[in-house]
Image 1 (cartoon, helix red, strand yellow):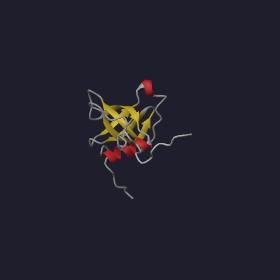
Image 2 (image 1 turned 60 degrees about the horizontal axis):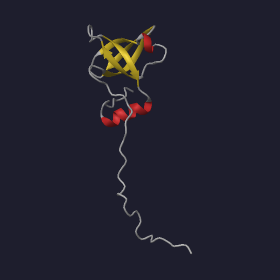
Image 3 (image 1 turned 45 degrees about the horizontal axis):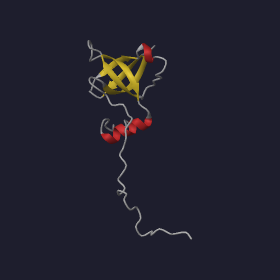
Image 4 (image 1 turned 180 degrees about the vertical axis):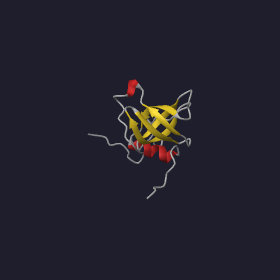
Amino acid sequence: MQKFKDKSKKNKGFAPQQAPQEFTRVRIPRNKEVIGIVEQRVGANRMIVKCLDEKERNCRIPGSLRRTLWIRPGDTVIVEPWEFEGDTRGDILFKYTPAAIEWLKRKGFIKETKNEF
C-alpha cells in the first residue's frame, strides 16, 4: 500500500516567498560621462547632441565603434566629453535601447520632456 503524506503542512521547512529583486543590465554613465539625445547628424561620423547637463556638444563616434553603432536623430546615447574643449565636443560611447530608456525614466536618470507640438 502507498502511504499519503499529510498535505496540511505545506511548504514545511521552506522560507516564505520574497518579492523578486530587480536586476539591471542597463549601462549607467560613469565618471565624466553624460546622457544625451542626438539632435542632428552633421556629416560623416559627427552629430550634434543635446546633453542632460544643459550643454550642446559636437560629438563623434570613435573608430572602434564606427561600424557597430548606427545612430539617428532622437536616439539616446552616452557621451564622454573631451578633456580639452569638453563643453563643446565629445565622443559617443553607447546607444540605449527603447527598453533601457524606459528603465532610465522610471529610475529618474532621464526627466520626461514635454512635446513641442
